[in-house]
Length: 221
Image (cartoon, rainbow, N blue to C red):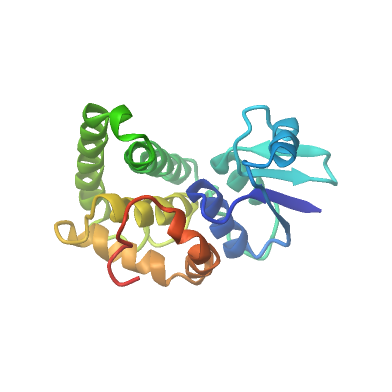
């Protein structure tokens, strides 16, 4: 009864896919081509911002947008799996904070750098790219400190924050590598890549890598 409107190469969609696979929630994948006017209009009818992912729940008659909100919604499904947002209030706040850190200070500046590669040469924004790279550098330093001694983003339990981290760090390593200078972050990234849910997501996205405008893929891939 759940349908995910998505694209497999989108990092925010990958974030939700990791959660779906972690919780073993049955769903119907519906890939959206934003370049197709009909498919774009259908997505906009579900969520006027016309951005994926969007999860539709036929039983509830609901359309749920935004990756973090979708993952919180999924905690009510797949009851055999542990929740991705802990019941403990203090732990839940830390999970949400790390989720925001990965989304706002790794994912978004990475996208800003990638977006600049897609612009015509005379429309490039070197100042904006420099700001984005500085934000990534600050985020890497914060994460290096926070992740020291942790198996996952918030301790020993895989959570919403790790769903956010996996695709964000994958693409960030592609545009501004961190593995050489941030050993704790690099070790955490290796654990994410070895996680079966994210390994599956990467394989599903592999056919689309030629569309990524930054030339070299992450080391070891």
